[in-house]
Image (cartoon, rainbow, N blue to C red; front, side, top):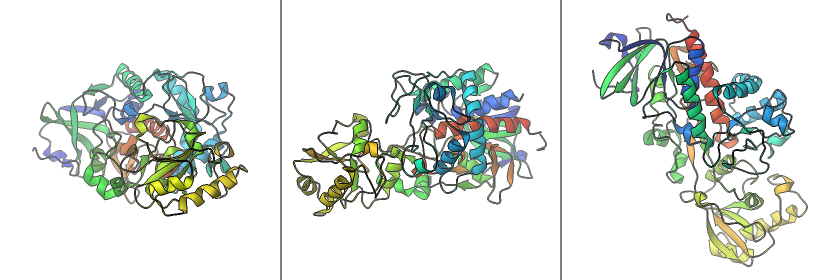
Length: 494
């Protein structure tokens, strides 16, 4: 049998012989897969990891490396820098960050155990400096740890939960911390006795007559290999951002954007398709992590964003992910960031934000960018009128980021979709319990199947409310839980 498809499981009756008979098979060796393997191995399971690439990494290795942590009075880094983070504040913020369909049980488990998770990460070898970077920063590469990585201090979140910085970056200087994080976790998994197979592509699941997942087919050296996983298969194969058909079906808003998908190169949706193929439900498939890096420089947060009608539409001090989602909801593709001479700095090269117009008056800028006559001028007039009083009644920007745009020359910076840098990856995936057990549409467990990371829909399920560090927090923490749950399952499904 050679015609394998992720969407079509095969029966154990079609297995010619088992190449491996093990306890737990983990598909994917990014942060979720590494933590799932460590969790299963800690519970005594015989664990094999199958990774399609020639080394560990996945999309996690392309991230900044920050993990969203707090609660229980604060992590050691938070406390060392004078921040007290109560669990209820952490929990409430995470609920808001999860959006309208936030999972309260999953969120409560994470909030209660996040401090222990910090300690666990340190035990695996991840190092953190006891330092804090104030203000608006993203992946600074300085080796410092604690940052404001979300909407904590922005409206409406600041009114629901006490603000606190919770992004914890590992101690890495001059590069993205995600690579270091995955390398550290992968080394820990191998040191604990997990067996790793590289250049091993998962092809499809294997099921018993009762639809229980019994194993998986993988391709190694051009040939199918049949793996019997007596306790469970854990899918940690990433999202579907590189699958054009799935993206058109579930997230057509990306047609406005340039091809800036964030992926380690293998987010083809195969893990999600395998789950669907055995009856699993996929949820929130339309949701994306999407961001627009209007900062650094931080001074540009004091500017205002307008659409091609010359109208403002969001509070610019929010996390760039929230800002970007609101950008995609505007008519057309043109978005402008308005700044004056006092706050202007050259945008970073990677942002691809260009200067669209410069003028001595806002009338000149308005005319040059071609928005409706009077629209931009009126928008700036209203903004300046209230900003001078430290107020923003329309969008509730925090006072420290308010400033009248009244120092010429003035400029409009082009943040146009399809031109500026709007990186994105998918948040939707298989529906699971916090334990990683995959669920059907009816809420029944697909026996023998688990999922974590972006193959599952976990804590982050709302692009509008996302905070940096939520995805890696979800991958690492719930990857551990999935591994432990799979290892605890008996071969007969009990």
